[in-house]
Image (cartoon, rainbow, N blue to C red; front, side, top):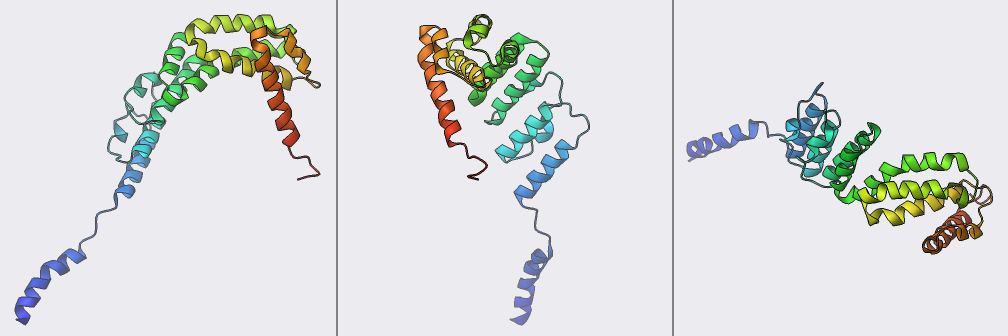
Length: 215
């Protein structure tokens, strides 16, 4: 009986001595680090073995930013928000290279970041519109702002309207030492209510901002 028991225990002892395989999260982390350490990745395949969706998405996003024509690789990604962030990043790169058609197309694929992506296309141009008129009322910069709006509207559609004019109104008020809500009267009637709302938001935030004495 003792011999039988001893024989039966041998496989269990041997199994207990063999090293346990590393947990999946450790394997994923190592695959992630290996992929990011590649000097010159050729594609996104080094991330394929990562089973954690978020870690794989982050891995693919990191590699895509190091590849030529980064936006062409984003369509291979399936996990949000990483896929959207990939297209967002690619759109900014295309914008900086003044490849506007590509930038617009990428923003449309940016999923949850599509609206923010579109704003990043026209915001640098808006800043150039505003720069010569800092501290002045709307009348000084409005013609150029309207021209820029008409330039982008056919490409981005009506979804750009509210954020575009909110950004413009807020930027004019914030650049002024003494912003005046009466300036809203210089805008077209359709923008004046939005102007009053933006001004009220700015004043409310300013009133709740802690002063050095209250901190």
